[in-house]
Length: 280
Image (cartoon, rainbow, N blue to C red; front, side, top):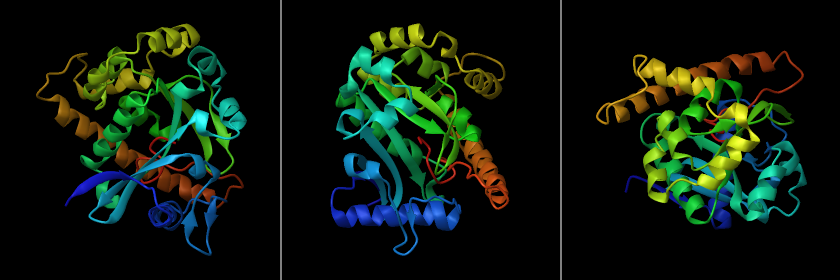
C-alpha cells in the first residue's frame, strides 16, 4: 500500500501516535521533557485536544506526524498569542486565518526522501484550502536554515521553551516570490493557490528587516554555484541534496546538544528534521 497521509481521529489512532512520539523524543533522542508519561510510554500536551494531527503511515505503522492548531480553536490562546507575538496578525486578518504547525516528526527510516515532502504538501494544501493566511511555528537554532529553505521566515527574537529549550519563532505566508527565492519544495504547491498579496504587504510593513533571511541567501548561492537561478531539471535534485544535508547536520547537532544536557540544568530543544519537530 505504501506511504499515505491520514488524520488521527479515533482514540486508538491518537494513542498509537502518542506512543510514536514517546519512542522518538524520549527513547531515541532522550529529550528530557515533562510532557512525557513514562509509566504509559506516551507523550502528549494540551494542544492535542484542539488540534489536528496528520499522520504518515507506512502500511499500518506510524512513520511521521505534523500537527496543525487553528488559533480560533484554542480555548485559551493567550499564551500562544504572547509567545509568538500574534497580535498584529490577529488585528489584520482575524484568528480564523491563523494556524500553528508543530510536532513535525519522522521515523528514522523516512528521514530522507519524499516522505517529508508528502507530509508537508498534504498539510499545506489542506490549511490553505481551509483559509489559512499565516502559519506560525518554531524551530531549534541548528534547523533554521532548513525551515527558511522550506519558506518560513524569522520575524522576532528567540524564546526559551520550558520543555524544549531555545527556539526561533518562524512564520510562513503565501509569498510566491520568497518561496521561489528559497527554492522551497512547496513553491509549486503554492502556485496552485496563488499569492496572498495582502499578507505579503502586511509582512513587509510589519517586519521590514525580515524580508530576506541571510541563511536562505547563503543556501541559494551555495547550492547553485553562486548563481541566483537554477534550471528546472536540476531543481529537484538540488532540493533533495539540501534536505539530506540539513538532516545530517541537524542530527549531529542534536546529538551534541543531548550530551550537553546531562551537565546542564536547562533543557535544549527538540529537533524536527532529525526526528522531532520539523515545524515546532
